[in-house]
Length: 221
Length: 221
DNA sequence: TTACACATTTAGACAAGTCTAAAAATAAGA
DNA sequence: TCTTATTTTTAGACTTGTCTAAATGTGTAA
Ligand SMILES: [Mn+2]
Ligand SMILES: [Mn+2]
Ligand SMILES: [Mn+2]
Ligand SMILES: [Mn+2]
Image (tube, rainbow over all chains, first blue to last red; front, side, top):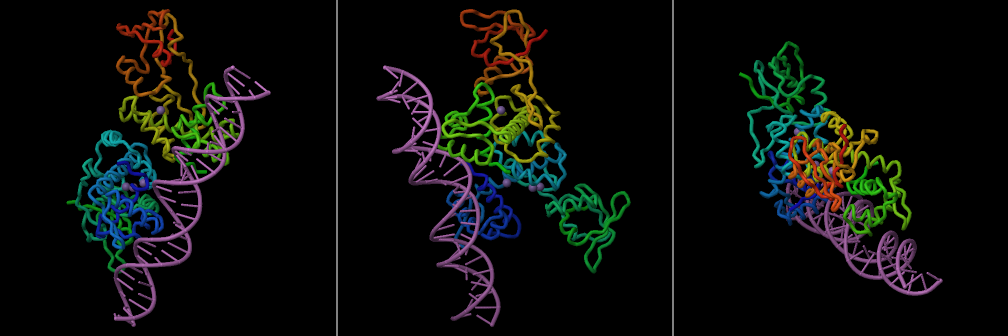
């Protein structure tokens, strides 16, 4: 059963929408995610439902069927492996890998992906710290917290970002914050929830709540 | 000016047809190359002509315009660089790289290709011995002869193949003939033009004219 | 429980790429 | 040159994915 480029993108969109709190993907949410009109989404949901990739009821939204989940996770696996390739091997900055991976993820060859995985050393996380599902679709979970949940005195290590926009990632570059950067939390301001951090070496920086919220960290002993 | 996957394939087909003896690509030749009906080709030739990528006159066939040549050579450059990646880095056998490169060649990113080229060490030839055009579209030429043109006593080095079918390449694998293999020509049979070769080490093998014709060699002093 | 806003679906149309069958042009042979 | 054979183009239709505008359904707040 060969899926088109477009069908794959819809399935990935539904996966992304329903992977957290949201249980059912509404037409408008999907439209927003794949950047099309609601009318087009309705058509596609009907088609994907007919093909058995999603559960869809008129006016009630869609969820992925088991096959749909399989397709979506494989797509995410491919996307993230390519991102690792682009970042680690071709030295692309982390804010540029997503767009190209968006194309590469649709290349169709199981052998290619298993060899790529191997070539990259079977990485478990992509350049943004997102887990790479294994070939069975299992995601490796990790203890992590949003940086806006920490308290003064705690030591943390940056392990991911929850926002992938080019602007945000470039701003982090500017702050010299990247995956693996270690911080000690110096102060959390009550007034605006801004956080002052001290880098491993010595320099300190202050970030807004907005930034902290989008940084994932894990605690250091 | 963004071209679709399909338009790119047509331009590459016309390039391939017209790169040797044939001066003008006929509708049927293109149809054969891209594996579609002649009617579909006529439509596409009209479109590509309107967009300025080819010169096309009804009933007379098509040739690439300068822009068309540029697109086609860039596509071939991408195709061959990806083949090198698949072969050298991911260790795909040479008979498997073409099909996957057929997809990868359409990935759209100049930066990606220049980084890939660099990562691969700016290779000048692909895994089949075909030259990789540089970013300006120039092909590196090389002294080479078809193996059916050699004479007894000459020493040659395999540098390429003119047939890329999986069957042919697998047959060469079986004969342990690959790029870089050195031979001394032992005998050329008058009767059926079969050729007996001695490998660098010691073993000899006999190949048919059919095979010899499709092997490109360069002479050794 | 009745409006009304908002979300969703339907209707109808369009572009890209494809097909088959029929018509027209060109090439080849007698 | 006249008559076929072959190639190429046109006509008309279909699929996929998209759109806008109109119709319909759902949920909320008076
Ligand atoms: Mn990404
Ligand atoms: Mn994509
Ligand atoms: Mn990522
Ligand atoms: Mn190839």
